[in-house]
Length: 179
Ligand code: HEM
Ligand code: HEM
Figure 1 (cartoon, rainbow, N blue to C red):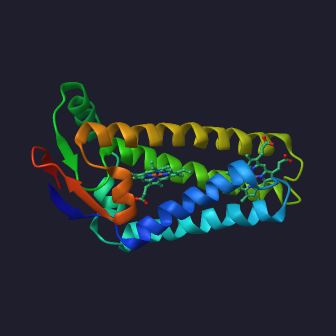
Figure 2: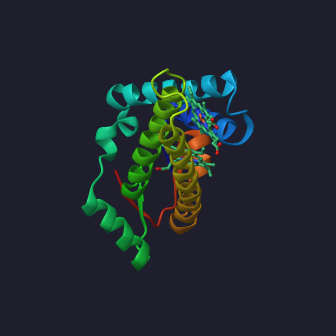
């Protein structure tokens, strides 16, 4: 096993706070309460901070480190199909697509949520429906995200959820590391 510090404290705090805020609004808060609105805005503010961190943060936090790449995504699918053991120290190419999807979807949920509080869009059906459809899409994405994290942890032998807590990826010696 080799140990690689990859996730800085901000990324970890960001991740688990976003999980808490999203879950709170999707499952627990009364959707007509001001609490629901503030929890939603907090999630949006957190993502705004993450976007800045993606430009100025340490290497693996930067968007430039995990830009979407169809070629790299196909290679990862090939790794899965052929049982090749390659471990990405930062986000994997497929993981990157999911991350961008989740960040964009939650921002749009916040935007449609805000619209519902304005005079112009209050009570407008399609805005409310879009808010709900986006929440459902985020929920489907999160189920896939968690399944993929578990799948990739088993396949590569790297405990990814633990790395998102400790910041450190422990990589088995037989894996090829992709910086
Ligand atoms: C509301 C639910 C969730 C949301 C919205 C969410 C969102 C995200 C986002 C935005 C990232 C990118 C982190 C960054 O670079 O800033 C990420 C990565 C990650 N998430 Fe989640 N997540 C959720 C639930 C979970 C859960 C329950 C787990 C644990 C099983 C988990 C494990 C991970 C891991 C391990 C990564 C890093 C993947 C990698 O190594 O590339 N997530 N998640
Ligand atoms: C993480 C972000 C958010 C999540 C997960 C979320 C989730 C939800 C869910 C599950 C519903 C219930 C939909 C239904 O009735 O089936 C809802 C409704 C609603 N949300 Fe959000 N929301 C978020 C952010 C916001 C924000 C930022 C605002 C406003 C500032 C907002 C305003 C509303 C309003 C006004 C409704 C009520 C629609 C109605 O039934 O009349 N939401 N939201």
